[in-house]
Amino acid sequence: MGRTVIDSLGWFINLILTIFFDPVVQGINRMLRGKFLIGLFWIITGGLFGIGWVIDIITMLLFKDIIFLA
Image (tube, rainbow, N blue to C red; front, side, top):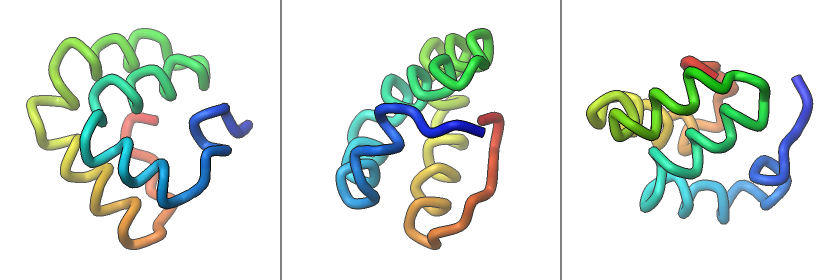
């Protein structure tokens, strides 16, 4: 899977963006990776009603490459 512009911002900046703007930033990131419908759904539902948002933050903090609807 290729890196997107958001991926190349660095871990700390990506973590900050994930904490404060996850539904929009990660939704756009998913769209850039070719998962348009999942990205749109992510934005509309606010990161799967907050559950996906928490999973994204935990994933970033643990340095794991768990792909949850990415």
